[in-house]
Structure formats: structure tokens, C-alpha cells
Image (cartoon, rainbow, N blue to C red):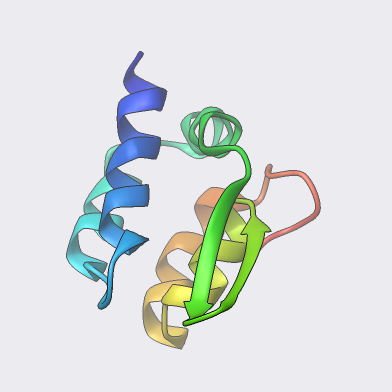
Length: 88
């Protein structure tokens, strides 16, 4: 239940125009690597719209790569080491 809630928080932080980096960092500050794997799995594959007319189905790692700059990516990278298919 907690992992599902955190996955939803991450989605909401990245869903609309502009990224709420503080919310993303806050989620990862609450979990360890095992928790990150649970959140990754609960996030699943979701439709990501890059620009009008262009979209793709991405997992959490791919969403984060698209939404975060290098500084924020470095912070969450350690938490995603257990995610399938690598990290940020």
C-alpha cells in the first residue's frame, strides 16, 4: 500500500507541465533500495507525453531520466540500483 502511494506521488510530480523535483526527492528520501524496487514495480509502465502528439510507454527509470536534471538524477540514482534494466 505504501509503495503504491509513493508511486502515485512520483507520477503526480511528473505528470503535468513542469516537474515537482522536491516531491520526487522527498519520496526517495523516505525509502531504501528495497523500497525503491517496490515503488519501481508499482509504478509499472505508464504513458509519457513528451510534446503534443508524441508519447511513449515508459517505466519509472525512464520517466525520471526524462524529467530530472543531472543534479537531481544523481540523488535518486543510488535508490534505483536494484531496478530491472539499470538505473538513471
